Amino acid sequence: MVTKFPDDFFWGASTSSYQVEGDNFLSDWWEWEQSGAASPSGKACDHYNRFGEDFSLAKELGHNAHRLGIEWSRLEKEEGVWDQTEWDHYKTVINELVKLDITPIVTLNHFTIPTWLSRKGGWTNERSPEIFARFASKAIEKLGNKVQYWIAINEPNILAILAYFRGQWPPCKKNFDEALLVLKNMLKGYVFAYRDMHEAAIREDQIQPPKVGIAKAVTAFHPCSPYSILDRLTTYNRAKFHNHSFISSAIKGRVLLPRLGGEKLPIKNAVDFTGLNYYFRQFIHHQKPISKNPFGEVCSLEHHTDAGPTTDMGWEIYPEGLYEVVKNFERYDLPILITENGLATTDDSIRQRYIRDHLRQLLRAVKQGSPVIGYLHWSLLDNFEWDSGYTKHFGLLGVDYTSQKRIIRDSAKYYAEIIKTGTV
Image (cartoon, rainbow, N blue to C red; front, side, top):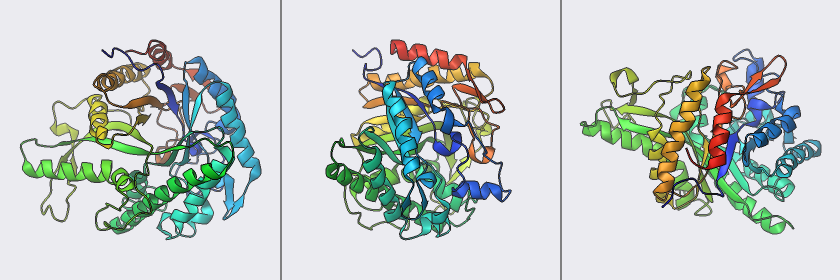
């Protein structure tokens, strides 16, 4: 009987390049900041220069895996023009992880894109899938001898909705059809990248076959009223769209998005593992007419006496949701990697309980046979939290942004003990 996590389990934390490196001048997000629309990211955590210190702390805390990003805008400053100095930098970064016996898990696209691409329409450009796939193929050629696990795109649904439907992130559009177009192009870009990365690995000497996946934002959706058929229907529709449409399209080889369904993709089964980013639960209620709003609306937590406390992001802490989404994703018969799970709080005792309670739920799923291969906490470091700036604290390591001093939190030490024993 399973009593603890597997011995070969991936334990670690995640970061994204833009949020920790600093000075990503040629990114669309940086350009948006300079317009005064958002807090400037500036030096961030200066991880670009301090990665060695950060990885040494991760090793000290028992981590054997680390998810990091490589910033596209640094590597391809102009279309088709590659910066070898920056490729060499990321080789050095990855070599440092390998030297510490920490498995690198590399993200190619974590929301930001080069300014030259954003000025051509970004992900609305019909050529964007091929442009992204070219970058992905180049990454295999340059880094594939040290990296096996790749996350091609992070949270495509989140970018499409926040940047093209809600107008919250650059380019601040408010058009659902445009958001769907972006999601479709990101899907095609992901599938093209998967195909080209595997082909590039075959062409290159000393390149191991890559394992390519997606980091998918997933939510535990519950009907606002479990007794309402319409609430249950809209909850099902929302979960199908938000949690599953992207990955099911990549597996089935066909675009399965609202209003855009049917287009055939060049290959099927373009997923080697599933990355899940889980943070919270949402209650969904219908709005009439349901034909015009099949995904319903989010119901306030105030209406639910069983709702848990919320984080500094306003997200409900619901550990059972991690178990629920893992069990839900067993349907794909693919390895599951928890690529993000964490909370924003200034009370580290809450973070410690959060880790304990979520890992108990994850161990529950593992005991029942769920194919979970690892858990990566979000985040290793306090960092630049997009439109929230530096006001939210997600890190196992605190950061003094004036001195750039790292502070090991008690929750990080608690997590280290879990890693050491393999149980909660």
